[in-house]
Length: 147
Image 1 (cartoon, one colour):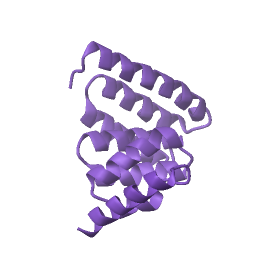
Image 2 (cartoon, rainbow, N blue to C red):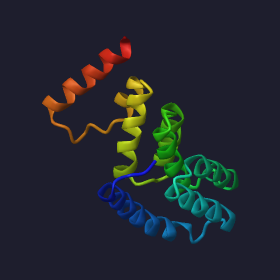
Image 3 (cartoon, rainbow, N blue to C red):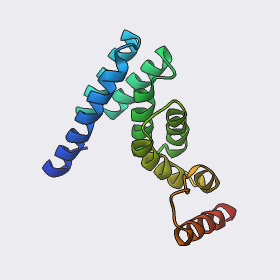
Image 4 (cartoon, rainbow, N blue to C red):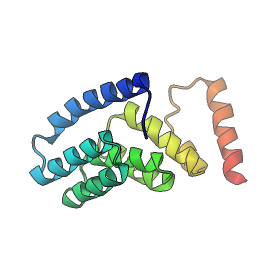
């Protein structure tokens, strides 16, 4: 999967910033978990998504609460059409303290792709939405969930 130069740069920039945040969180982590995670990132950037998925699963066998591995694996599963599994991993990552802004967008996408509309309505943070925005969103999702 090759991307255009502009899109490739934006992914590189995003993952570069992600790497810095992850590096700080990995200082106290199991060295083996970190090694698997870093290898998964290298494989991902080398367009070896299946290899990256395997290495992330290896990392999670070492430490099932390794948030960076949960998030990246969830994102890769979402990209490969496994939205239900991605939703479960991303939801767990949020519970373990993953960055809400980064993960919520992926989680909403996973819920929509896997037709988990009731779960989307249940977990979507609507406290900041206006009344006019909140009502149509929840009623539309509920009607879709009932179909």
